[in-house]
Image 1 (cartoon, rainbow, N blue to C red):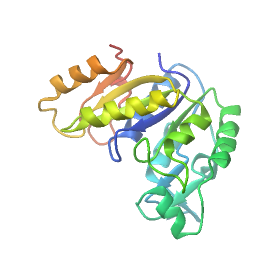
Image 2: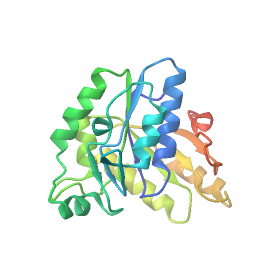
Image 3: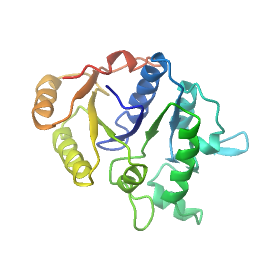
Length: 221
């Protein structure tokens, strides 16, 4: 079972975190609960309706059945598609984990479930002293790890799992996500299953535009 409140991270940037986050939101919605998504920090935003907005955050809003202002869902939105702490520095801003936690608690107060999506990988810096991992610890959420199935992903996945565990957080599970053709993925996925002491929540194939990952999730094993 997927926890109602969860933090979604990935082995790297562009590994499909939003695809899996929105899929999880769809599953929770089908369970009859009120669900909201949160993208605390986003780079690569566009100026829409008088504010910077991010396509990942908008995708999560589209899957939510709770009406909330954009600025609550994505409190830190930056234009350039670069590391969050660098983007924040360019506009003389510092990402505050305590501020994000307050926003999260506001969302949690009006939602049965909240899916929080990180930015980049597990240890991406948020400011000069804190990383995305510190945010997950502050929110005290179980973690879902998205693994892009490709050459090198075993090392990235196991290092991420080790770091998550060292910080005392529960790994709710991991998802094998195919961004390209599946190729020799079966052996990779089997290796990950043998080395990660948490359930595989799903094996997601390369999806067509607009296709949801929800139907491929929660295949525990």
